[in-house]
Image 1 (tube, rainbow, N blue to C red):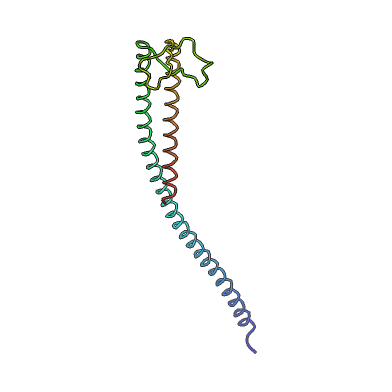
Image 2 (tube, rainbow, N blue to C red):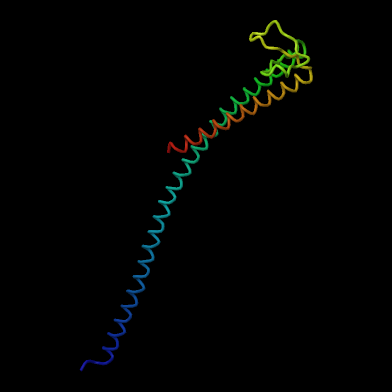
Length: 166
C-alpha cells in the first residue's frame, strides 16, 4: 500500500494545480476582454473622429453659405434704403402720384386731377408729403422683409442640399 503522505501530497498538488490553472485562466480571460474593449474603444474613437470631421466640414460649408447669403442680403437692404431715400426726395420735390382710377365711377377721388403723363388714361392723385413718406417707408420695409425671407430660404435650401449630399 502506498504511503498515505504521498497520496495526500498528490491530492494537495492536484488541488493546487487546479486552482492555479483556474486563477491563471481568469487572468488570461480578463486580459482578452480588456484587449477587446481597448480595440472596440479605438474603433469607436476612429468612427467618432470621422463623424466629427464631417460635422466640421458641414458647419464650415454652412457658415460660408450663410456669409455669402448675408452679403447679398445686406447689399439688397442697402439698395432698398437708397431707393427709399431717392423716392422720398422725389416725393418731396415733385410729389408722389398714384393711380386713383376706380372701377366703379361713383367712387371718384375728390382731389384727383387728370395727368397728361398718364399712359392708361386713368386718373392720378397726388399724395401729401407725410402720406407719401409713410407709403414709401411701408414699401421699403416690405421689400426688406421680402429680401430677408429670400435669404432665409436660400440658407435653408443650402442646408438641405448639404444634408442630402453625404
